[in-house]
Length: 203
Image (cartoon, rainbow, N blue to C red; front, side, top):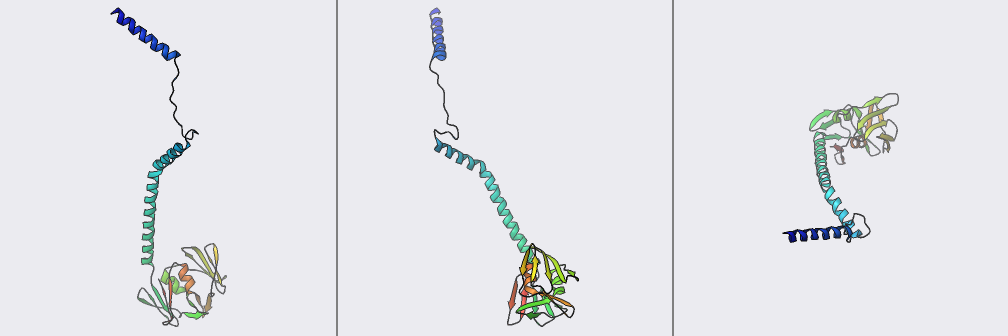
């Protein structure tokens, strides 16, 4: 029994002497960005970034899909709510979604461009036109911003930009006539001209 205790103390003493006075052993781990192994570091960083940002990228992609779907839905609703207007040069009859209306004056052509009564445009598109008698200008809101069209001038304000007109607005027999294509397109409508019928269709 005494011999076993002596051996135990001997082994313990040898272990302690080796621990305190023996060679030091330490574990060296490569830290990100170390010069010892830059390839591993780059791979580690790429993997970390991919794993960390993967959920965010998936959320962004999902949000983009939802926004695209919402945009398509808004466009569809706008197309449904926008009326189809048919006007014939020289005729006071106009059609809005197959309903016949009588214009104050018939549209006419100047330099190959159709001019039509401003009042009918406002009623057909549901747009409020503000007429400035002193400046002889008409203002209204469009999807691209505020529009100001001055009678007799071949430029118009469209949002923050000045746009050239092929023909200016005019006043005939007390009625204000405005360029059909510019008014229609500024309100987001597509204008189609049928020369054989002398008809313009907006939708």
